[in-house]
Amino acid sequence: MEFTDKIRQLAQQKQDCIWTLAQQVWKYAECNWKETKSAAATAAALRAEGFSVTEGVASLPTALVAHYGDHGPIIGFLGEYDALPGMSQEAGVAEHRPLAADAAGHGCGHNMLGAGAFGAAVLLKELIAQGLVDAQVEFFGCPAEEDGAGKAHMGRAGVFSQLDALFTWHPDSANHVVGTGTLAVMGVEYRFKGITAHAAASPYSGRSALDAAELMNVGCNYLREHMIPEARLHYAYRDTGGTAPNVVPDRAALHYFIRAPKVHQMLELFERVNKVAQGAAMMTETQVEWTVIDACSDFVPNRTLGQLLAKCMTELGAPAFDQQDEQLAEQFRNTIPPRQRQDNLANSLQCSGMQWADYQDVLLDRHTPAYLHQPKLFEMGSTDVGDASYCAPCAQFHLACAAVGTGAHTWQLTAQGNSSIGKKGTIQAAMILALAGATAAVNSTLLAQAKQDFEADVPQGYICPLPKNE
Image 1 (spheres, rainbow, N blue to C red):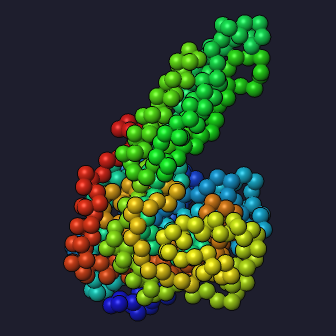
Image 2: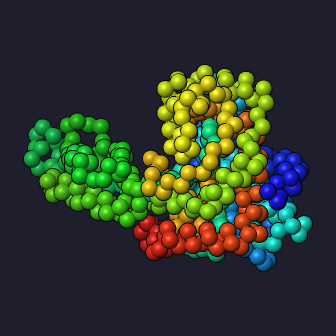
Image 3: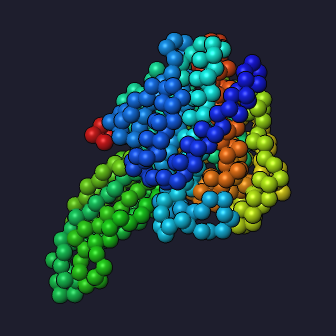
């Protein structure tokens, strides 16, 4: 491909600043909406590379947009930097060893994700500055992917609407371009209000909010039979109304996740769950209110851009892991049971069409699978990248930054996210993204086809699943 050698050369020059940012964000390990230091470090790194940076976009304090260039197609890269609670772990150590009890850590690898996307923006900027590509590049620092749906807020504000192509990636234990959808999701808190009473002396004068919450869960469990098989309901108690068994609880709260393959299906299921909550309140003569905490759309894979990413991955290859990386990967693999490693690869196998037999004796993935466009299949998870994919033609890939079979949201991924394995994956991801961006920028026919795909896939445009007042 036209820019391959140049991108390799530039990546060699820029790898230190890319990995330094990844290590900074790994160290800060800030959770959703609190990524103050992580966002500031990202903004500083972008300004040092010649980007103009706007912070606090979409009224989100830790969201930012960086821009370079003044003419040509606009190529965007999505970055993230939020961590997960309770995922603290010492770097590169293959035994569970938190840096601090109950502290946050990058168990989903967003320190690498953001730094890799930053690196792609920098590499494409260099091609533009050297007159090799006529384009504009934008980097998006997106907060609260794990819990909060930052990109939904940004999408509603029109942050992505001007883009000709949008690319992102995610650290993983196997390589593939994402050709499937994801589940749209809505997080809702249901709060029941009752009347307290002495549970022995006068229980008849009380109205149990806890009974209402339990009946809601029973009703939703019966609802499962009558919703589409791909939909999901999960719940957790936020408040059980107290700990004294001789007091009728006058309050209780539940946190529900409502998922479905498409946004409109999720919203329809949301209305049905609301009716169950109302029914539970009627049965117990309590009151119920609910608040949408967050919501994000399903991911819409763009066929043209997905095919381009797969070609770029094949051209540049998988990360160049060495024997030392293999030895470290073996230490981590030994902490994960074989069946769990296989389960952790399920999404990669679906996206790549490969088999578990291709991986079960492999320590670090070096495959570069062809792109499989399977928009009617769905990963049984959710991401607010879906909201960006409803706003602009979008494609994403996963790249090995950990031992094969390492699961997301684990201390093992946190540890490998600040290791030689993670570094090589992050730099390689930056190169693949940059090559895709540069190739798209100089190919007006490809961009036109990507836009045509997008308009066919999203005929009604973006309808933000967040309530207007959220």
